[in-house]
Image 1 (cartoon, rainbow, N blue to C red):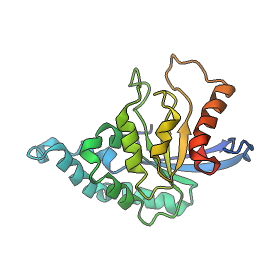
Image 2: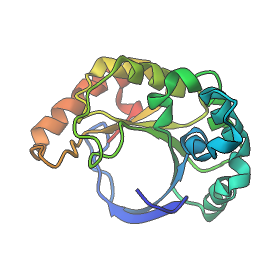
Image 3: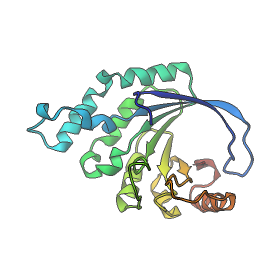
Image 4: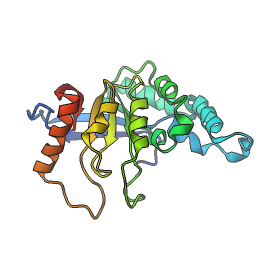
Length: 212
């Protein structure tokens, strides 16, 4: 993660298309931004002491454009990057508090963006979370994100040991499947393991909606 509100990553990437054909090696530029609800916890409590958590988050979502993130998102769009991703862990962590307005907040953030869009939802940084276990809330949050205007949803899949039935909650969205376990004590995944997990996902998503 970057301490900056906006991180721009340019790298040469070799990937395998879901159909099994190797993709060309080409430079890619990805813009990363915290999503509106992900910045909600920074509103000073002294200004919102009389409000419950959901109301505080709603206020912060309203203030998101004025915090500079909106301008950075537009700047990335104008640069012509290949993908703009909003990092949105709070939809999972605070699902009950965010479910009524998270879709609207994300869609407002993406409004007018021409670049391909993605939303990433994880269980937190591996260095801070000793053990990640799949929860039913993650599937509910995935279904919620599937209602947004994003083109793709990037999910943490391997470390929490999710199974392919989770992907049925992704609606018609493309899924960017996280197939690496980032636990420092975890074994390195074999090619056969990754291919096996990807093939299970293909049975649910089909080749046009799966990215690794």
